[in-house]
View (cartoon, rainbow, N blue to C red):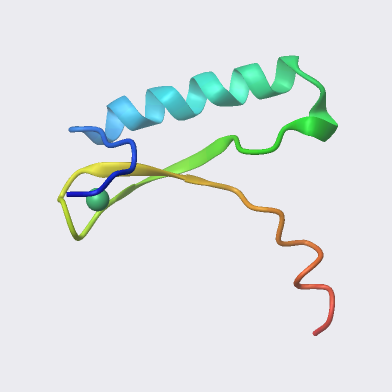
Length: 63
Ligand SMILES: [Zn+2]
């Protein structure tokens, strides 16, 4: 079993993503750190989890 937050349906997770997105917009944009971004189906437990967008801009700087 995954220890992550899990949802039985895709839409349940999607609702949380939408809520978090709205909250993130209300708050300071520069401090929107771990806002759940998308929902994906977990191959391990068969449920749905959320992915948070990490700050990857700096790591992808060199290319
Ligand atoms: Zn899982």
